Amino acid sequence: MAVNRRRFLQATGAAGAVLLWGGPAWAATTGTTLDVAAAPVGTTGYRRLQAGPGWPVVVRSDLAPPGAGRADRRVPLACFAQFTDMHVVDAQSPARFEYTHPLLGAGAFRAHETLAQHTSAALVRRVDDVRTGPFTGRPIDFVVTTGDNTDNHELVELDWFLTVLNGGRITANTGDPTRYEGVQDSGVTAYWNPHSTAVDDYKAKGFPTVPGLLDAAIRPFDSPGLRIPWYCTFGNHDDSVVGTLPDGFLDALYTSDRKVVGFDPSTAARVARAFTDPAALPDALAALATAGPVRTVTPDARRRPFTTAEFVRAHLDPRHTGPGPHGHGFTQDNADGVDVFYTFRIAPGVTGVSLDTTTTAGLAEGSIGLHQYLWLERVLKRNSSRYYDAFGFPHRQDVTDELFVLFSHHSSWTMTNPLPDRRRPLDPRLDGAALVDLIGRFPNVVAWVNGHTHENRIVPHGTGDRAFWEINTAAHVDHPQHARIIELVDNGDGTLSLFTTLVEADAPYRADYGDTTPAGLASLAREFAFNDPHAKPAAVGAVTDRNTELVIAGRSPVR
Image (cartoon, rainbow, N blue to C red; front, side, top):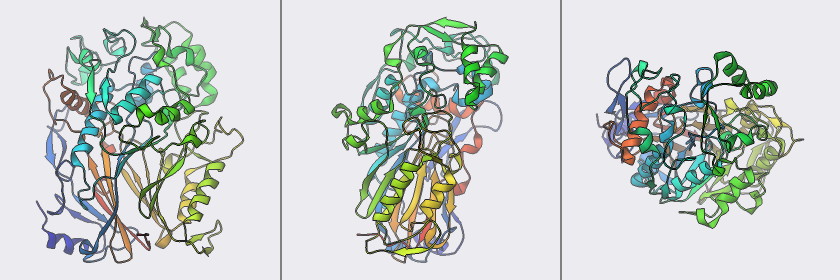
């Protein structure tokens, strides 16, 4: 049901979280989940998708009461889109461990993984089409991608990722240029083999037979590229073997002609343990040396893992500037790959900070080194007229407040990794609680935007002028395949609001299984992701984690 302007103002003037079904009538909802969202047909078994009703706007007053009449006073300050966890993937790489998926879940194998590049390109098309923030009408200033841009930090994945965002032709195939050589045509029943009519574990759960799918997945297609500038944040899958294991131990496997497609359960468990326990790595290497189902594949030098420095330098390469800016946030100061964090101007009076919460020592979870922590503290102090010291005492200084939005890959609750980073091996590592405490000392930080969890979740931190919002967004590679548009506005009453609107890929909600167009493949990828046995239905988040207005008090933006 549409909500007229008067009813919207009346509803949001009250304290508490208020649901506004369909969004306010004056919002530009087209192309967003305010208007329509994917919904399953039926309630059990394998389900196809259809266009369902849009999701409501929720006004969240956890940190400040929303003021009556603020919609008439609002001044937009910034508008940007967040991509996260695209996991552009070389699905045929020998340096993948699909046989561990019964133990490790979707990170090891996804039924839809061969189509990851198609879903990302469809997301680019959606943002290009939406163009403006639905609540302010402000043009989207930029896109930021908050890590796990690649899946296994291979050179070819990096090239595909840059092409998806900058535009151009992608052939998502490695090895033999004429055919697919991954696990999905291996005949091993632990995987979905879409070409075959033989029953496998996925077809037993209702997955269809799609004879031309793998051939279509490796066929060249074009990404239109973003029409607006974009910035990049580093994720754990951008610096580690499948986002978890340290480099150097398995580098030869990447470009080899030997791909393991299965192990007995006990051997697979030995390998899987290394993903959560670094001490188990030697035993995992011994297990990999044992005999198991192996297929010979065509070696490909493009599968070589890139270094952090190579990742940064690829962004700095003028060939990859695309819609800009040059370097996509990275500068020559980051080119050695040691410190890959930076600041950038979002809009007048608003600065973005891209953090690096990864560690090259392994494990998927994150942390922040003391060196970077102190750098962030200095950046915030330089731009804060008031702040709290580490003991909670307020300080004032003669500078003008600049508003800050922080970006990282990991969320506060996934920063639990104590392992030292090999780039700064003597640097102590600090957890998410320490970073929350630091951010809370600076009243001009309004939000921390991140990914990694593959779920939608919005968390309030602090109280009064020591409060900020943490906005965590679901992966594009996995269900529900979302991105966010975030609009920052000054309400003209001593408060700010952040509008968070989820968007889905520009693809039909249902496509014929014979539709091999890029949009058709992106549509099927959404369906397969929804039905993947490892999919997390709760990843879509509660209604309070989706389309929201987040109110925050006590900020004085510079204009």
